[in-house]
Image (cartoon, rainbow, N blue to C red):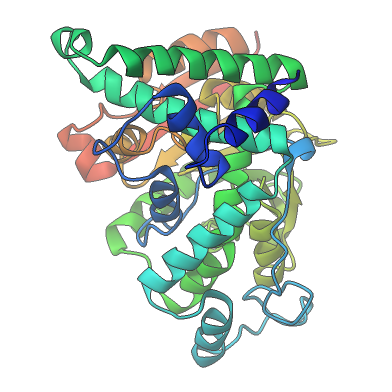
Length: 403
């Protein structure tokens, strides 16, 4: 009997269970009731943060990239918030954007958009192959459980209900069996969740970029980071900058503000929905929908690479930086920025460990990584929660050196 057959048998033997997500607690007695919001609520809230102008990189693999079958903004074929004709640079009016939001999300308020985003995420997850769907449900519950256990003292952990503890062990064993049986990894599961989350919210975020405005302090921190990466590019028309986790192209205006030309900018993002919007908003910029670590390739090296509010959502942020180092020319510049600061990411990791696995790398981690991949840390990030972190945000600058 395969793992999924065992899962189906368990469902049949549990008449009160209404859906697959109920299996985890019903079969293993592994409960986190009253300790957190539901995972899907956390995911939807995460996807709709109003003042995060740049979204995390949506990591995934082709094998589990299941798209939501939605009508989109122009009938059967999805359409974003850029020009209806990509060759035209004129953007739609605010009234037209609000109308599209109304049609797509059932309203224009933050709450209405969040609710529809959550439904889209759930639809995508439910559409995954059965074994992947089950793995996602187990993974989400385990991550929430582990995060809660990490907050407890040893005394509190010792007093936990034995049935719950045994249930958690069974759940982890089941997940391990699924991973082995279907040749998938926890990173694949994390990536599938990221993809579902950001595909679902792409149109709303693109719309906000047109009809909304970025807080001035956040904009200044982004401009500063773009100015740093531009130092390795401006003055050489052949030099290029790679924006990793580019989303709908939010960084393009800031890079052009520091004198980069559209032809010098390249963006990569996992979410095809984000890339679709980016291509419509900035038709003269090169964009790619791909898993940056495992799928993205480039025939030429880059003079500058920037991660803006993207690095922390990789399954392995240090691996992402290592991949960036391999694409960077000698003396090229690698910039990692989060305008809301490292403490913001640390709080995200605590509140929603399903999507944010860890905090941003600190000075020591970056220095150690640099030694192994030929990067020199020339500007270290502030300590999480420090005065500097609050005043300046997270900014790390590294340069490629000959090894």
